[in-house]
Length: 592
Image (cartoon, rainbow, N blue to C red; front, side):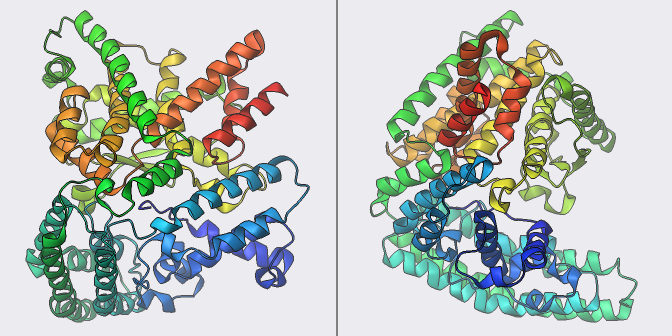
């Protein structure tokens, strides 16, 4: 399980509320007063066991900063390895009896999550600690440049300490990778080659241009409490540590991966690993929170790809575009129009950001048509930090902001921008995140969103709401919505194709290019992600389809009594839920 939720300072504040509100006794007793306190305590314990997480939580702002000098224990590389005794956690959860309302829902969701994680325990080493999508080799410089604070001389000294600690950290990672190799869990050759290339670029970067040093230098320059002379001394120390500690650690990683290449079996899917098909099925159930088999997911994806293609072709043909050569050629012809793109200039980038902000602001005014909760925090669209644009996603949501990667404006045609804004912002992730935070009594993990199919399903559903209420209505907008939908449906096909049907990497790339109208560059990124994060790709579309089916079901049952606002309130009014439980809860709410 590669994707790990990074909680904010709110976790530590929750800890303070627990301790202040009911006393420290509840921190140590086996079974606290309430299920919520118990679950929050376990999540907080897990977070506080990580020096890097404690930094992310901002404990240094409270005067607690000794952990800032240390990196995590890398002998356990994934969250599955770090989890406590889940059987014990399940038994204690089950011991909370006679719960009602939200507490009862929380218990059901918790037991579902625990059962899913317990099912994954035999496969906790079925992963690749080093890969090109969030692998530990890229997490380290990313974390140091973005998450480690540089606000004082002490912070700088801790930064230097973490540079020194990289030797121990990466030695442990090497041990973890070799342990997996001894179990027959070796990455596909393409993963090894991609990671090796990435690490070679890192170590071949001139020292003064390395992000570990450029980030430190830039952030130190903003400190008035550290003199220029001191900054230069610290910089020289850091430079020596990168050259003498960090780079040698990466060279050892490169040597290990070069040797591992000889042990890599043909193919790219999980079928090539010991008990790999069962591991994949468990991961698919975990991410989708459904009991769909890989074959069912594959066929549903194929059917949806065909359905969406037909609608897109009809729209393109109505625009006078030749569709005889299929969806890929027709959509490429549509995109071959300079008017669809902002100028590749600073003013063009400003216009792009402003257009996305305008889409959000217009939708915010229409919120009363869709929701009962309309007073939400303002959302701001901003450019992704230039320092990290090369490795950033196209757009992402974080703390009342949507960050947009403006390194390549050709990847952001004008007609797609509102869809990105709706998905990441309002009424997508930003709205859902705030709505969950307003639910009384739910534990931290369900407020933050632990079930990906729910979160991403809602965000896809949110993309389509503005068109449904007439806020936007053009063939171009519908094409953008459909193309995003097509890409998510195609993920269902390639994910199962790679991991159970033994598709090659090139077969999957060809499918996305020819059937999902993606560029080869986009397809390569999608396929390489599917190879190393198995089971996660289908959760977007499966989540969307569940919400759409629930809405149709409630409309059919309730007829004129159906309320879209009430439906949305039910969907968002209980925090993140597995899809089967979501259906049960929505049906109960709507009938009331």
